[in-house]
Image 1 (cartoon, one colour):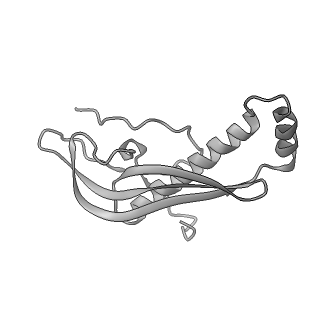
Image 2: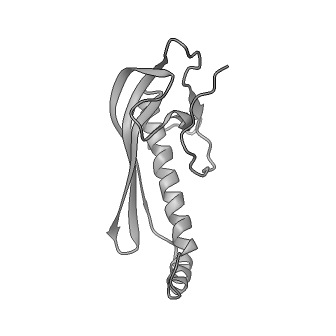
Length: 149
């Protein structure tokens, strides 16, 4: 995670093979690689903190803090997928998120789950694969069932 060469692309488990469930339809778990996690600690910059504080005076949602929370969850999730690939998994099951304030205006977000190796069940021919990690963060997506070719 922190010791990647500048010339080596980072690998991550394909996000389609991550789920809060403990099974993925069409696949069998052939090996468990243990608990994996992704962690980030975020704090808003001064301008966003001031804007967010004033916006919250009127009540309701704060788009500034929602945006910051979404970015933190996406970063933690991406790091989870990287950790799973690093330990030899091609999927992550039982994915969960936690968050807590670690200092004033500083929030820790962690994604965790179990890295596993999936193999296609008898009727499926789609094999989970690693994907190159894209540098631009994508919004989170619900796990999708693999398509049958």
